[in-house]
View (cartoon, rainbow, N blue to C red):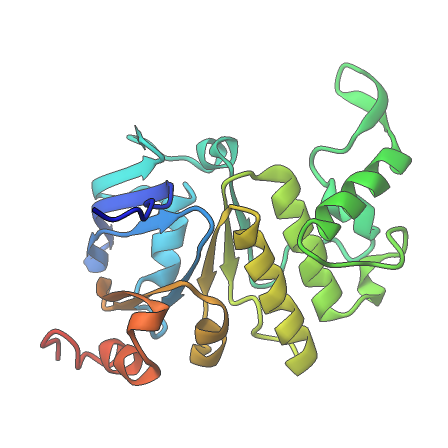
Length: 256
């Protein structure tokens, strides 16, 4: 009898289908996403990676199939429901405000207040700095200045701020859309380290990437999409770069 404990399932799908007009963007997609793991989603443009993450994060509704948040069957997923559950998305362009400080970007949307009357209040900037510092350090990153506008910061520092904000808001899963696409070598390595830290904290980390090298350096599992279908779902140690490329090109499981 094995003593291995199955990781907690944070999000799972069963037979998801999604159409845009006459195009079948997702075809019977079944995937489990586990806490404490980095799951990489790969595939050519239009393969289904982004549509899948939009469905599981509540931005699009599936036309058929089942979506579970933990053990809960989600009948009508919405972005608000996903955020309440603890799912956050770090988009490719980070969605940061260049004219605001690092601290204000981290707490954007839910800043700590000294006092408030109705919808109006006074932001507690000291508390905002402490929250930002704690969340950014939580993924092993450090910033020297939380008060300067982030337009002065490097790509790697901006990634740390975006990830810190996601951790402050969410508590179960963070989705990263092409997190290293516009970064140099050192910043790329730092960002991959931040993603690894997210999983090491016990959260699920989902990474959309076109970089096979990045995937094999950080992921625990890899799912390859082609024409809306999952054509490979494997632990990273049980596959290799060639197998992934063959799957993406339709040379896996007889797909042409």
